Image 1: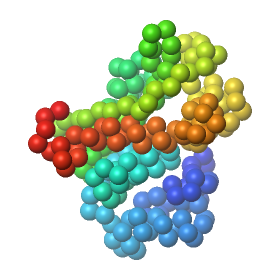
Image 2: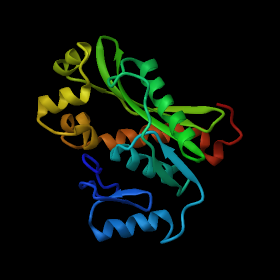
Image 3: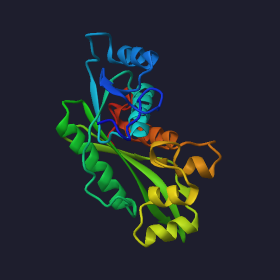
Image 4: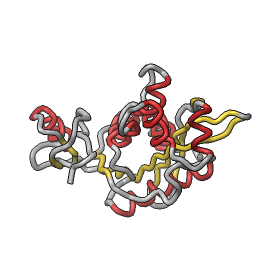
Length: 219
């Protein structure tokens, strides 16, 4: 059941699901998950649903939400993106993020549904990897992006042939499940920038219209 799943707290292989989190067998992770949930029987009143069970995305949403609007219970939800495994272009990448956000919102009783999608976009003659985040509230959505970084030509050429970036990167660099770890950006930047950071930034950008100070501003 927990094959290829990872602990939401420490990232080690998951063994159980408790307090709304995938967890390993470390008691400290269990204690942290219990604290985040609000106690043995309690829970945070406001819920955010994430259109993914990827631990990197879920952790990124938790950290971004804490930075922007405060503590909320973040619940992962396995939903379809409705786009190819390797989205190409801004519109297709946005569509995947939107579908994930809307699907998560409809699947879980929540304040916001959040979707994050990574895709390849073209600027000039160069191919960049970018994360797009959509925050959906049932009536409207807001959108934000991460920084973009240039993809090596040997990888972008394979993507143009129809291969998915994650699988090509895993084969090129010999790192299994790279999308649930530090990502291609981690490899290229010697782990100075990690995939989680790109996801966090995309969520914060999408949450800007939700900041209390911006409540009277039309976006």
